[in-house]
Image (cartoon, rainbow, N blue to C red; front, side, top):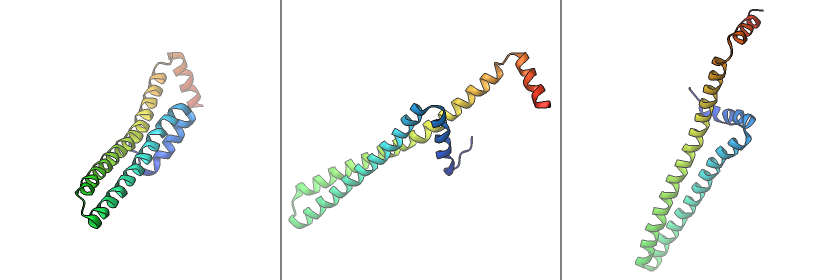
Length: 123
């Protein structure tokens, strides 16, 4: 299945029309990604502040704290990317699963229903 960058919101809208609770769960992944990215930016700002404090006071504790803040910032951005990936993967896997269910339900129709369906298409 080929999906363009512009199609994700359409696919999510389709899922929302089918199952609102599932759509909310999927949107939580995106919300988590955004929040983790903001936390990462906050840790990056703390890194910059610690470096500025180090250059003003030459305290080694500020260097270690800036390394700790920077490490936390990298960890948060990694988790943000993971949550964003879960968002897209969940949308795609749900759409594919619904497509498979649709194909199974069509294949499981009784023979008489398939004939009626074929007659309606001929008319």
